[in-house]
Length: 316
Image (cartoon, rainbow, N blue to C red; front, side):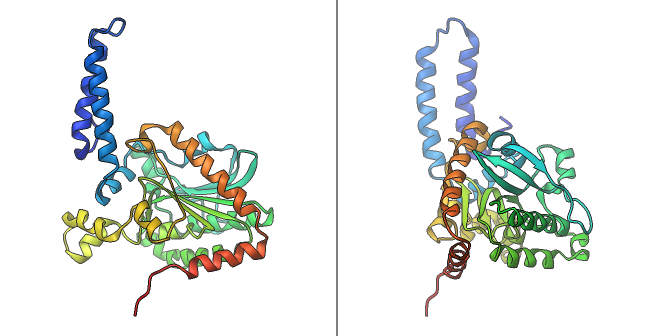
C-alpha cells in the first residue's frame, strides 16, 4: 500500500485482493473467474482514473519516490556512458550529472538532474537541486559537445535550483542566466525532456531545447504549487487549487505550445514499468535526433529563435 496515493486507494485494494487470491493456491488456482473479473474491473478503473487526473494528482505522481531517475535511464536507454565531473571553477555538483553517452548508434552529450531514492542518496544529490557549479558544469559539457559536434540531451527533474545561501554566494542567478543565453546560440541540436518535475529556473537552465518533450505524468512550471499557494493564499493547503491555476501538466503545456510532444507512460506512471517507459523515451529521442540532425547550423539556430519568439499568447 505504500506505493499508492490516497486517490489510488480503490485500485490498491483491488490489486491487493488479486494478489491474495493468486497466493492461496498458486499451482491450481480455484479463483480464476474471480481473479479475471477483478483484473478487468481494476483495468477499467485505472484507465478512468489515470485518464482524468487533476493537476495536483499529476504533481504527486511526478514526485513518486520510486519514479525512475537519470541513472535508471542511463542504464536502460543509453550505453557507453562516461561521466564527466566538475565545473573547472569550484567543484562537482552531484545533483546534476553529465557525460558522453550512446543512444542507438548516435553519440550524444547527456546532461540531467538526478534525485535520490532514499535519504542518503537524496542528501548526496541535494534532492536534485543543483547549485551554480552544477549549471556551470552543464554549460562546460554543452560547449564540449559543440566542439565535437554532438547533440545535447537534457533530462530535467528538479523542484528548482538550490535556494540556499551557498547558491547565492556563488552566483546562482548569473549561472542560470548564462546557460539560457549560451543554449540559445549553441550550434548543435538540443533536446530537453522533463521526466518528473520541471521547476522554475532550475529546470530552464538546461531546458532551452530545439525539441522540448514531457513525460505524460510530469509537470513543468515557474513555481511549485506549494510555493504558489504560500504566496497567493499564504497557506500551502491551497496547493491543489494552485496546481490547477498553474497548468503545469504535459497536456496543458502542449496546448499552449510550450512543449513539442508528450511521451506516454505506462498505466499508473513510469514507476510501474521502467522498461516500457525507457523504450518509449528511446523511440521518441531517436525520432527527434534524426529530424534535428538534418538541419544545417544556420537553419537550426533560425528555427530555435523562431520557436521561442513565438511563445506566449497576447491580446489587446
